[in-house]
Structure formats: structure tokens, C-alpha cells
Image (cartoon, rainbow, N blue to C red; front, side, top):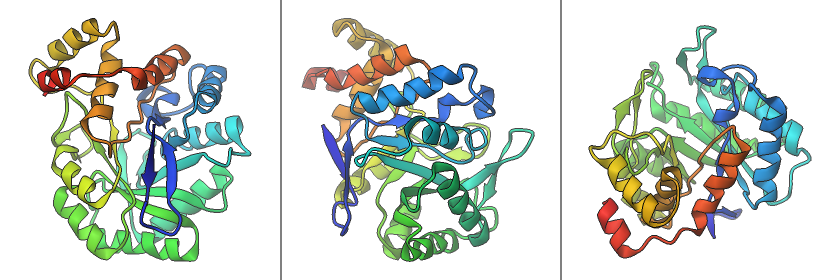
Length: 289
């Protein structure tokens, strides 16, 4: 089960339909070294050995923790591995999230990602909008496309975008992917404490129209009434965990969704990957909504 990124470009990327998000490999509050570094490295190695060919990371995870773990565990990288990173934000020592999105900031972030990931070109980079910080999106995205022309970036994506922002981005150039918050229990925009997190529901059909994979983050966040009860009932029916049904729902919702469930546990990683084997019926999907 695969999905193609930037399918209409000269250099499309075909990856496993179920990816892996590395954020949970860090310490508490997405900061510092993992509690169990050997297991974190083993999680990455096992994901790749199990057929995962898409990793999601950012240099502000840790800071720089996930990038360094990826390089330590997997470099030199398999030819079919796509590592996607994010720019547009940074962390303060108090662990708060702030915009880092001037053209100069974005260039600094790209160079840092290239260095810590030990790459000459990043295959896919999401420009994450974390409050505009006084910098118009068009200026930020323009800087990304400039670095794409220079060869530092192969494909450009957007993260945490509204439908209007995605439409504006598509007018500027090729948008390869969109990474928004999305899951069975969370489909619309909410505030997680560091600005609005844009939901996936309002952009999904636009992504489908343009053949753009939607990459959901925080897909297990639940804010819909009775969502847990629905998931629990279907999980019992399929002798599966609720997390597995959440992932299976995403895979069945649209062929353009590329889930990236993350975990720091080797056992949970293996459990999550088995979600790709679950076949939800039309009745199951209708019940889940």
C-alpha cells in the first residue's frame, strides 16, 4: 500500500501509505533526549525494517533530537526512504513555541536540517504556519520556493494551513503535501496552547482534487462527542486496539491520507503498523462517520 508525493512533478516520490512521526521520540514536552535512547534508535530501525519509507521530523523537536536520532540509526539512508522535515517555528528555553519564519530564519532552519540529517538535499519540507509572526505567508513560501530552485529542497509542502491559505499557496507554485491536525476524534481547528491547529476536514477535498497527500498529525486527539465510544465498539468487533482503529479509519477515509502515527514504544510501533491490515467495512465507516 503506497502513495505518491508530487505525482505530477519531474521527481515524484512513492512511499509507504503508513509512515512514522518521530516527535514522540523526544523527552517530556517534546524536549530533550528520550528516556530510553537505545529503544528510540531501535524504533527507527524497526520501522524501516517493517517497510516504512516515510519519516516525519523537525529540527525543533528536542531541539534537534529526532534529526540526530534518525541520522544515528539510519544513515547512510536506504534509497527508498523519504525524510520529511518542517520549518517555520522554533523553541525557547522555556519550551514555548514561537515563529521562526523570516526568509533568513527559514534558510537557517533548512541548513540546520541538512547538517543534522547529513543530507545534501531535503526531499520534502513543510512550511509550518505557527502564527504569522508579522511575516506574510507569501513571503515565507516565496523563500521556500527560492531554496527549492537552489536545490536545497526537492519538494515543498504546507503545514497547519486553512483552506484559503492552501488555495493561495497553490497559486504560487507546486504544493506537494499538506500536514494538518486530523483524526476521527478531531477534524476541525482547535487551539493546543500555542496557536490554532488547523484541522484536516476543510482541506481534504481540495487535496484530493489536486492529488496532494494529506498527512495528519495528532490523529489520536479526541474532541468529538462519543467518538471514543464509536471507536471502542469497532475495535472490539475487529479484536483491535482503539489506536489501530483510529489509524485504519484514516486509511479508509481517503486514498490521499498518509498517516504518521508516532510512538516511543517498540511494542506500540508494531501494533500501529498492524493497523494497515484491518479492513473496515462500509458499515463500519458509516457508523464511525
